Length: 349
Ligand code: SAM
Ligand code: DTB
Ligand code: SF4
Image 1 (cartoon, rainbow, N blue to C red):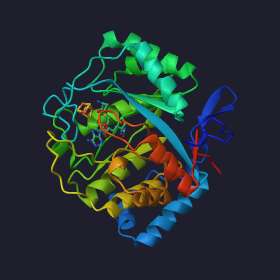
Image 2: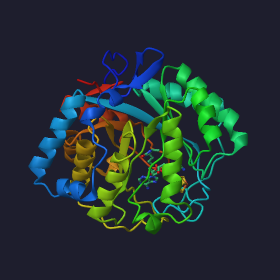
Image 3: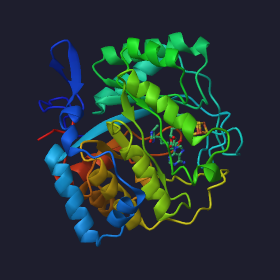
């Protein structure tokens, strides 16, 4: 894996001092980022000739980032399976029958040990995920310790735990949490085809609480679940019309897991996946678009197209939460062949 700790470049979403207050670099470039996108406009982008779309996306990307840097994150499932929610894509839902061993919340020490390994493997951010509808208050002390201890290793911290109360958000902020991942997953219109145990509005409420507390927002979705292009456009419009664009936008290709309702979903045209990344980048140019789940099933050429379309972050390590991810040596080889730096931060121009 290329050296990731020798980064001297500016973070796209880092805070810069301005008197007593801090302001994110994304805000300072607010004039360049639009928040009034419509679904029709997003669909028009999707419909562009492929070359025009990719050129626009790469041009937008270069206005905000070093085009040859990719940020590397590592994922750990800190609590696995038996989830009360019924998300149709998810092997961790108690409503489905995936072949998965449920595990209770990990010990803080074991999480710290995994974070140390991730750092040695080149990751700059450590994302801890729990199969919960929401965390219980009794879990908060351990979660706070995880954030504090992982942050002390010099890694950026990210949690994804489901819905949070305002108090939980404040407590995690107090522990130094950098990012909270909370995906909207698909369009509001398609949402109830995928999840019935919570609403789209529930999701937006947690995102708003997280943003208000000053924790950086990581929010995106999944494509390839049988949604229409209009749904993909609608999902991106919801993200791009938030009061601030999420600092990080993960675009996941559905990983089809045996035992879940979407196990036999037909494949999405891979070029439509690339288009989704490109449209996300054009609509939210200062955000880091992550080529997220599904890379193990993708060719090197498809991943290269995703980087060309403006993706500038990936998950590294052999496992996502419960499913596989490319081997580290394979990823290192791909980045080398593409001349991409696995940098701690993708640079802002
Ligand atoms: N339970 C929390 C929640 O749902 O917010 C956090 C963990 S959940 C597994 C995190 C995200 O993983 C989901 O929002 C979804 O976008 C993604 N995900 C889960 N299963 C997936 C799959 N089979 N393919 C692609 N992405 C998946
Ligand atoms: C995100 O958007 N993708 C990651 C992370 N955020 C938490 C999760 C992908 C999970 C893929 C299925 C699994 O491994 O269980
Ligand atoms: Fe639970 Fe999250 Fe999986 Fe939905 S996506 S079933 S909330 S772990």
